[in-house]
Amino acid sequence: MDFNSKFIILSNINIINESYFKTKKYKSIHFESMRIEGSPNGPVAKGLFTINGKSKGLIIPMTVTGPVTQENGKYRIGISSTVEISRESYQMVIVNEDEKISDTLVLDIQLQIISK
Image (cartoon, rainbow, N blue to C red):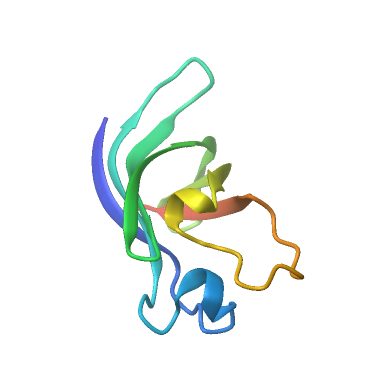
């Protein structure tokens, strides 16, 4: 299935450490899907993930629940995913060596899609 959409994953990142996410310069983290495809383990979204102004291809495995028919006749589908990315791939460097930070970031994604 072809699908093109941009998801803002985190748009209020001022609360996150400036040294890792360069929040003064980059105000959002986002994923722009190019395709959703089937795989042996379920659907995957393929697209560009951008953080710190650096975009890289990313494949996000998805778990889909539903559809559920609501009282108004509209359908609702739930999508969840957990994916890990390398901190260094997106130029997130450790500024203070005393701070403990993982080499990977874990993205926990929860979405609901509701028909019009």
